Image (cartoon, rainbow, N blue to C red; front, side, top):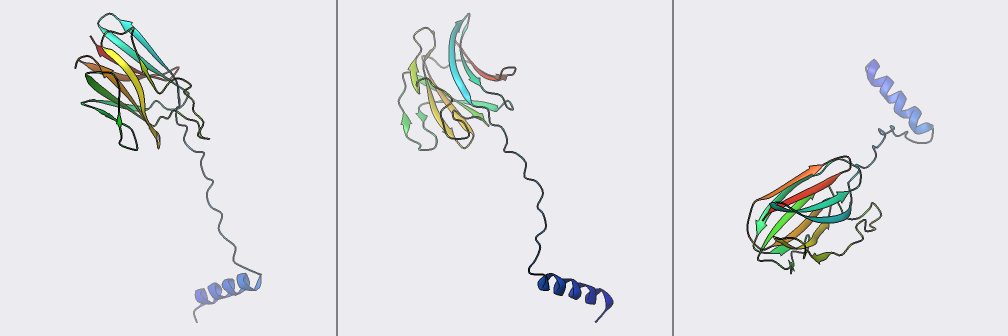
Amino acid sequence: MSRPHRRALAAVTLLLAGGGIVAAASPAQGAAPVIPAMTNIRTGLNTGFDRVVLDLSSGPAPAVSHQLADELTADPSGEVVWLTGEYFVNVTATPAAAHDVNGNPTYPGPQKFRTRNLQNVMAVAVTGDFEAHLSIGLGVRSRTTVNVFTLTSPNRIVIDVAH
């Protein structure tokens, strides 16, 4: 047996004779990423557009997207979400949630509500809160320009729907 093999065999014998195998220490696990949680939904009428604002807790600003749709579906069930409106806008934010790490709701308001003070947006609904994907649906009177973006300090998602 060569010298390197004898050393390896001696080390294995020593470990086994010493009562067991010593596991290598694993690297420290990093803390779970902070997912901003929705705390409020605000609406406002502005010149030329309706604004819906989703207030968020601290954390990284989520990526946002939107789609015009003929109907809204709940995430993850896929069931139709009935909401007042002729057309619909589906807004998705990732990573974001409407609950904390313990599963407790962070948004105390209604899951669906009418927006009687706005010209185009007729209703708002929380349509999904699953695996760090937050979905909000808007019922609108007409298909127009929609602009969705994030602001920070404090974190919020802004949805502007033209009249």
